[in-house]
Amino acid sequence: MKPRVLITQTLPFKAIERLKEYCDVFMYDNLSYQTLSSLLADKDILISMLTDSVDQQLIEANPQLKLIANFAVGFNNIDIKTASKHKIPVAITPDVLSEASADLTLAMM
Image 1 (tube, rainbow, N blue to C red):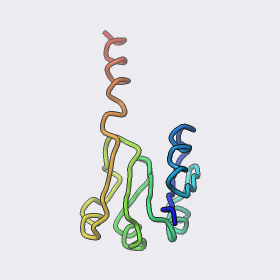
Image 2: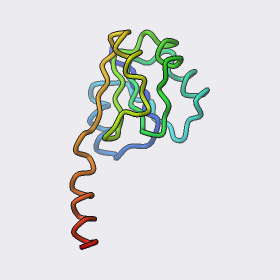
Image 3: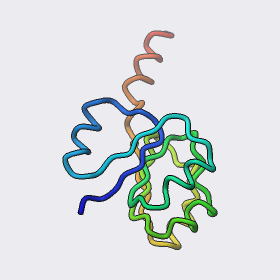
Image 4: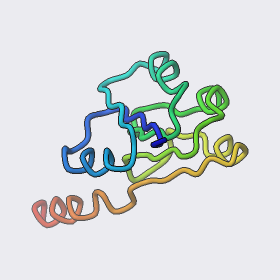
């Protein structure tokens, strides 16, 4: 059985097609906190955005989670302490904005 992945915003087509080779993918846009919470109930992996609050209540209500992946450089929106307590790894995309930041800096100079 493939892992079930909930994605909280539309991601680029290539990324989704690759993910679908290994997982059952459920992708939405602009989920409210309540909707996110209810949709996450039977999912193994959450791919969230920086705008999604992944707090203690959400994590503890979904003990089946095996991974929280934030499609962002930071993780201020994720309760790392609670995720660690429940042995749920948290991943980020650390260099996703490096090139864009460098381009903007050069353009401003």
